[in-house]
Length: 255
Image (cartoon, rainbow, N blue to C red):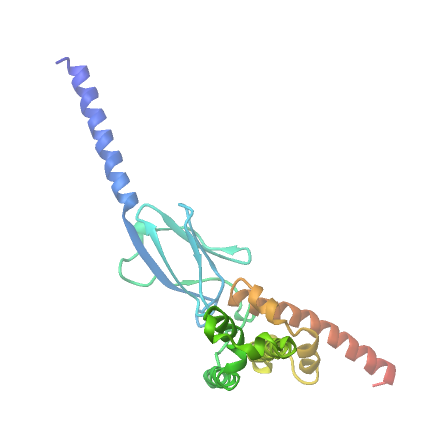
């Protein structure tokens, strides 16, 4: 065989093996996890974007924690409100150890929210008791249609008393609305709003009325971070307007 052709064949083989090795490395995924803190490295930050060159990504949870599987040949970086870190090669990260990060952002951007365990327990208990107390009303539609499909078991009272059936349906809808309002009360409470906005009475009392979200609005938020952001942004706006109004009123009264 001609030496030149032999060298070409050897080079081609080496390149092929190299690409195969790189492909195998790229397919091997490494779990990268940790916590993203604020500049003080004391508070976990929610909603930080965790990005990679390969296009994979995730967002930190309410405790600032994240977990993502990335190719060993990939790199990772973090971004929050226009502030981004440098890129870190996955291959250089210590395996089986958390990779924590600190971003130069003050924690007051969005305060850490402490979940009131007692409030959560009370809400769940009250909700279950409410459903149990009015179970016949909530199950009305289901029982009625089951009886109709049963032929001989048809509920004649409901069939021949449409007015009664209509009243029952209206009562059911009212109970559902009451249940939804209780859910809004649980989610949108003074403790949470005060913790995020710093508002105090009487300002917070007015804010709770003006910016109370509907049940449908609460369901429309993409995640918990979006909901807390809603409270924070409107709280900042309301606080500024409230202070302006207070100063104007005080000026007119000659304080």
